[in-house]
Length: 525
Image 1 (cartoon, rainbow, N blue to C red):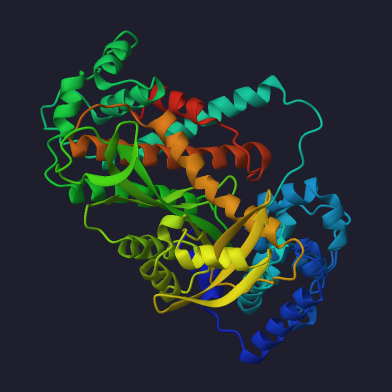
Image 2: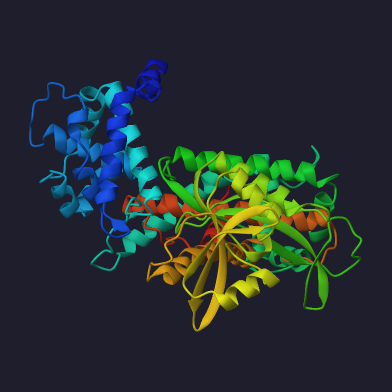
């Protein structure tokens, strides 16, 4: 285990201040690189090759097979792609053309890279590398250039062997056990000291109910056929109904979300340099009963009711990394702009936001003011206001209506056409109306929002037990539990991908159903 002094030595370069003149030169260098690019896509190797390496100090370095410049470029690549040394080696081995382009005709081993970082690079140079990596991603966002910063591995030529599947299954079991052990202690189920059942027994019952899409009564009976110490339905519901207020219940799950997030950070699963697209949305759980019951809100009539329990969530909507950052219950008198502010504020403390995607329900003066106050870029469809309808009639597609005023706030309105129908989108970004591909870009970007719809579907059909209970605490617990299980699945899926392929391949290695099955079977100990 590293000593305290070692930790200080390793992290000290983050506190090193870089000379303003050097920063300005780096800024100009990176800016000029992106300005010279043609198109909205670029390979990171093209960018790194144009970085002015004369800015970096060159210490006495005994050239072996690898030059100082080639290893320096490799370290910048490692930082931008958020890889550790082991994963960098794996990446270079799978991308030999890219490795050669940055000067590596052979793949260095882990010892060479580690020695170069820890003994050749001083703290100031490390700080400059961090600054360059951050600046590359920052400027790419400004120029709307799609960089290949997510490490993608080529598909294996041969079909994966049975040993790979056994390895995946065994590793999944091992990691699921660890995750279960870390999460269960924080799940307060109002159990007394003399309670016959353990928390794990209740968790297993909940997962079984979700997997079978069953209710507590039948779920308990079927699980008892397979194992011992299974709580009956009345016992489970008794403990869930003992909560006094939803704020206490919400705090429990917030702690769990934070623990999952800390595990993700510890595993280095999200790139601290890059910005992430997020989606914010509401989801309804239809309610049949007394509409004056606590926390029941109105909704569009559907399936014989216009009442529901409502929840708001903010999700990362990048492929393979669709974590739900936060879920909030909606009370009858909650204002959308207040909920929006809480979700954005929470997300901003954990990631850098590139853009927020919302549905037309947020197209209001209050919500737009909130988005502008937090200085986040956004894209959402406009509602059918009379002014928007008139705009659609008189405007050509594609076109951009700048500084459209709505209730004292100015926004840009994008008019685009698809399948001979015009659509209006609201945004606070500058778009080029002369871009012949504008419509495709708008729809392609907004499609990211469907990532949140996918997450709702997975939570409902893989991780949320069924219930007819009208008790809000039961419903709230089930919903928040499904979000917890969903995030644990995403976390495990990325970890297994890294263990097998050395990087996140952005495709699910473990299905949600398989994860829930494994999670139920493993004993947390």
